[in-house]
Length: 251
Image (cartoon, rainbow, N blue to C red; front, side, top):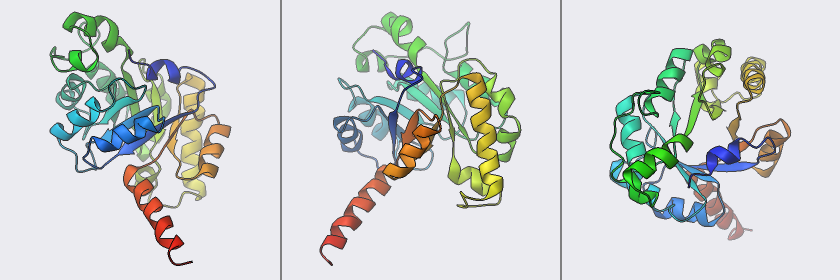
């Protein structure tokens, strides 16, 4: 049964959702074995196609690691296909307004609550259930995650947070800083003010927050501020570990 939605609802949650950009089922399998609460299979920026995504989702079966898919854009056809492969949730990029948020939520729900087309023919097997079992037990427990990564989304953050059905917000620091004209300047006062507005709105709406944290110190700082999720990138973890091994040989 899906478990990430329940975990996110715990006020004391400290969870990990690693972003997978490498098109291999071995990556989420290894992340799951390491104890990750979930993986975000990145179809927006990575080299992952639908066949890869299906194999990566399947690799998390019989584990407590939730497979989420970051779709290339906020479109119902992308969402439908990812969920019908068995994804436990969707990560939506470039959410700019409350209308965008409502469209995202609706694309994950069957009528009359949304507009998702019916076709969990593969997903039923991923979840070891039946077609109607999927509708009754799996579909209501899927996770909707929105990326807040533009000036417009910050300006509209209170209205976005008022939309029912959002399970997780992630201030996407790279895109947000870029849209603000401050690429990579994560200590700039304007960037910090924008993130502060997101944090305040999410807290008021009781929506969990997540962020990228590539060091122990960054993760602990995020949890201390009330974030419930930290994330890293498979390609960065791999490069950092390989760099460390290279450094050992040159000491």
